[in-house]
Length: 412
Ligand code: 7TS
Image (cartoon, rainbow, N blue to C red; front, side, top):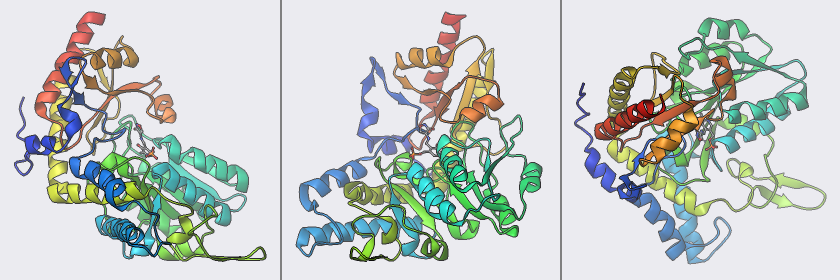
């Protein structure tokens, strides 16, 4: 079976932009299929990081000297690009964070702690990453609110009828993953946001796995908050974006106190800065934010539509081949899926498979993928997960499937 790649993407040229991909690992060409954990970085992102430290290193917002001015201008450029990338109305609605986890914790603490009252309800789904579970457990405990969980079906899809049944005027926050990291499911978040709003609930979307794979439009979605990480979309680690609607961000308390988030400080009274700076205490990851701009440019240049076509073709091709392996048990077979394949092979522990694939230079992830409730739902310990990116190829999938077959032969 061969599926034609989207003609718009010249994958070999794209691969040339990623120096890490051309190395051998364990005497084999590297096949990097752990993109849901973090993607590799193109040269332009790496160069932006080193260029900042080579030429422009200075702290931002407070300096009057030339380097500080340069660093500040480049830093703020990324904010504009981020607003454009997710179609936010206003640049001030973009907050720099450390990543998705940081963004969700910010909302849980700054919005949740202020507005949740005893007996209020927070809704999440069974397929959330731990970073969209634990912060809500913490805030629910503090505010005596109740955490409720939307069930999923055997394909790993949210059961919409159950979601509707759980919604009520007690529901104050719905926090949902857009694309599941362990199942690949693409959730119907637009429909779910509309339903939640009918009950007056605010909706946070965990976009960590969505931003690298499909066009995001927060205005069209009408979500109240949207969090994502730079490192999962070809950008640096330690940087993320939190989008929030202006009125909500203005009504919230600061997350952390410190420099940059104030207008005036005396021992008697401190006044806070305007958004987004109110939520950006301390010196941020300046180099990382500046380099994130290059990740946006990289994705924009290739185009998310082309990326999506390419990755969907890879997903279809790999799923078809893996399905032919005796004992192949896919975990997550949703109708709408991103390029993530989680699976088990009967009689083979995911860890053993992962180690043996690594010996052939193939990087996959094994375990619970920080979604233990998903593993409990499917009554499994973990899975092996292969996740593809724009630079993944059909040839790599062929080699990967052959390697899995060889492991099956060896261990059975
Ligand atoms: N939400 C989802 C859906 C994720 O996949 C992840 C990370 C996070 C939140 C947290 O993002 P962070 O950048 O703040 O760490 N997921 C994974 C993964 O699947 N393997 O390693 C990290």
